[in-house]
Length: 297
Image 1 (spheres, rainbow, N blue to C red):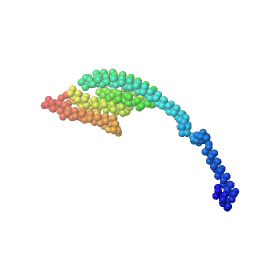
Image 2 (cartoon, one colour):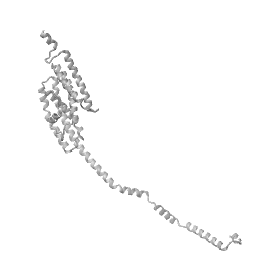
Image 3 (cartoon, rainbow, N blue to C red):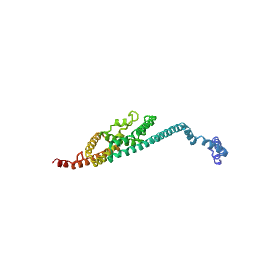
Image 4 (tube, rainbow, N blue to C red):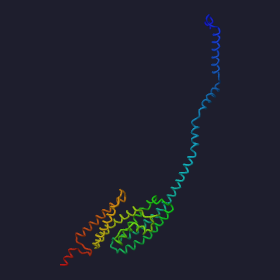
């Protein structure tokens, strides 16, 4: 200040203006620094509170998802009821399928007597006693499936194995009676099935026929042992025609294809018996061709 006043070129008005401005700035600094801590804290709080907290956004999102959450629970509650109802239907079907299995075991045990050279009419009469029982069980199945229309193949696996066994036994019985193949519509008629509501599945029928062919080689061997030397020829013709018919089908690599491959071995086994009978010169009446020639001379 002393140097300032000692300068003769300095304007007094400029000096006064400079001094006043300096004092004004100093006073402002003192005023800001003298603000109480509580006011500073309030200032900081207001500054922080002006920014919306993250929690408020999550709360808003949770409220927005209340309605979808309710819809989700409702959907899965419906699923729970549907699965419970489906489980009840399966239990009823499996109970009936178990009864069908028991009846088929009795029928099979009756048909096994044919391998012991028992009269065919007697064997068939005993086996047919179970047909009416099985027919009634299939009627019960159709009643259960009628309650859930359009869901035949949803529960089909629960009784298809028993159906295949039934077809194989019916096919064997039909062959013993007529020497011909049991047709699909004949099998449906025997079991009183309606193809439009509760019919006989095509693959179940074909697999059952393949199962039936497995019985024929054993039957041929037992018949030849009993002196029926014409049986191999009849069975061989039947199996050859059946095998040729199956070859018309375009089968995939599934269970049915495996059963069809087994049919080839059934044909081969019967062929071996037939050729053995031919080589030995055995005739239908139990005598060899060579012995007949000697008797004629």
